Image (cartoon, rainbow, N blue to C red):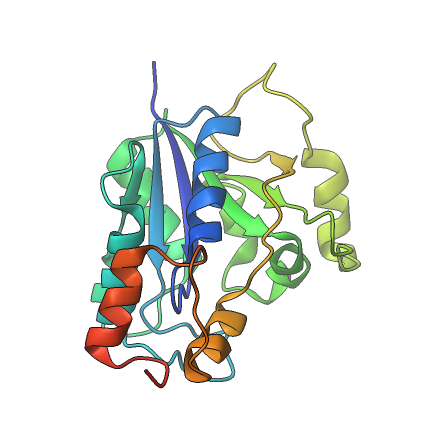
Length: 213
């Protein structure tokens, strides 16, 4: 059987346990063999640079996931000496796994609405399927006209016809009750983050004096 591969990118500043739970749910709901967790090296879409360096965010991702089966921290975007674009990462993964592989890119509903602003966004549909995380606690922003038609035409509700790329599936993943922003603020204020971060990540943050610690 051809491999089924997921891609979950983000700044992960820091990666927290809700991120891990989302990756687990993506793996399980889509019956994936492997999920690439891809920290962004130089996130071009953010107004402010991450507080932790790319290498520190990579280290915290590895500490969060440990040896979790089917979840793998992918350093390719951190290793690039320039901003990395999703279409480039998907092109590389498609070449590595082959044309028969089933690729799934996880994005949030807010990212879906912003997709036309991504580099070569139309090409993404020729490389991967989209798994769109719709948060029950947040409304999905209106889709631009150029994307709304694709949303209607490509959306599938089940896996009766699994394909290598080109479809969109809405997922109801665990509600993310905490954000990396809120965690950074709590850490800067000296408040505990027990249950939000892996203990090894808390130790690392303290050792590296990150986020005002």
